[in-house]
Image (cartoon, rainbow, N blue to C red; front, side, top):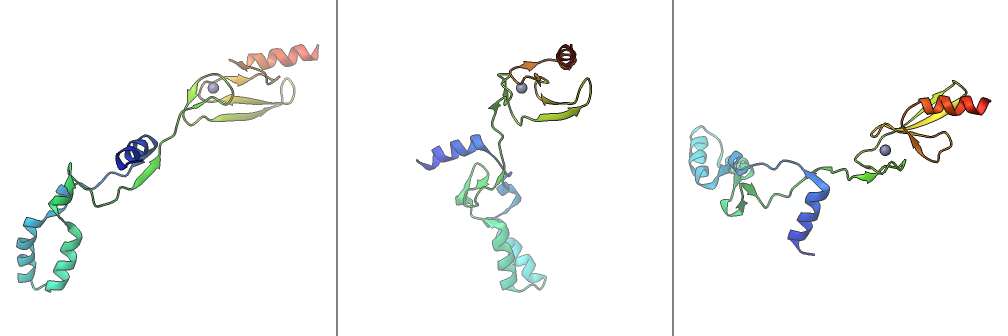
Length: 143
Ligand SMILES: [Zn+2]
């Protein structure tokens, strides 16, 4: 797999940390002038060089405003859409499933997909839209 292909795949999977634009950094041509100024202010040549090395870039290394010799950093992983785990058929990113306990009409748990707002039927075999299904189910069961 070549470098370009790897980058394409990574672009789909991750969010990159914004890269420092080289405009923020000092160009080599400005370096000598700055160096002379700092020198005249009494700084030592060695400490000036050390400091400038950190903020100076070689313009040959710049592509599209970014220094390509500085490795990119991953900021976060992109969340991939997944099929609803309660089988509503929707593709969801970051599905949250809520479980709640209810004591009426009789003690039971409810499982709800907070994305599609559907509940798992008390029998667990299908999804239902509203909580009235629970009332119906338990009232019928009582009879
Ligand atoms: Zn769902």
